[in-house]
Image (cartoon, rainbow, N blue to C red; front, side, top):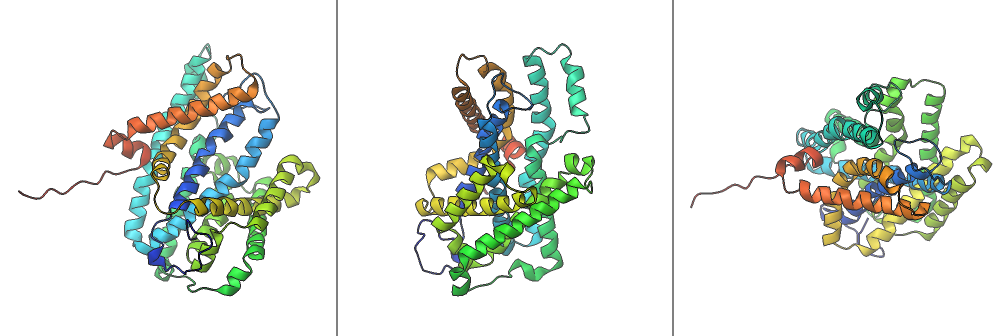
Length: 388
């Protein structure tokens, strides 16, 4: 993917594709999409952690639309970067660095933020026995204890799995299909659509495993096995794409055909799902997700050429924003619900509160090396001081 110049025909060798600012930015955008997604859960029909009194079915459609492609796209980019890092580092260096990056925020969020969020909400809403009810929630077998951080748990699975695969088969570290490959590029659109269908069929397989109870409650709620099965093909797709530079470049060039197909498939899924046979819905989902991800990246890559200050700031803050945004949404919902506003302004106000609040928290966290490591997995490099 050649950022900043979608029409360039110059082939770029792997060593020239050292930094992908467009992918960094898109990954951050997908994380930030979690804010309107979780805010929509407070105002759509159906119970969630916190809810406003007024609800609207509009937010069912908004949440469904965002969820169609944000997590598939996120894991595709994660697979791409994982393959890139393993091309540069041995497994013995790659795995510890990724564990340092992911485990501290995962544990801090799971053990500190999530329990505190539930307890403070009970106190805030005036529950008569907040501690008793909090303990019931924390020990409920049907609950995923990681809440919105399940994606880090799944990313840890993929990270360890890919590292183990490269350790067993060292040749994979530098395997790839180099060269221009005009045949692959010529058939890019049908190849992408076929890939979306395959990804959808993989999603159908995961759905059937849950439907026929091959996955029990422990596997689904504690191990996040359903999520892991759903997004594994997307992670693998990103890793494969990184090893085929010709397709990598083409994937970053906006395609009107793929955009229109993705738009049509996503609209059908969100607004006319009942007219689509149940067995075909995962296929539509796969096609919509890959097409919209490609269109998003193509549009973003066209405008991002090299490092931009706002991109760097967004990327740096995005993980911490995601970590804190759900607790802020949950705790702000009862207060914003009191405002004499229509439902859409309340929703927008909730999104702004979560974004600005979590960004402000990030600005504070970055002042402390210990907090940066705890909540962002960021190790501060020590400067080596030489003698006078």
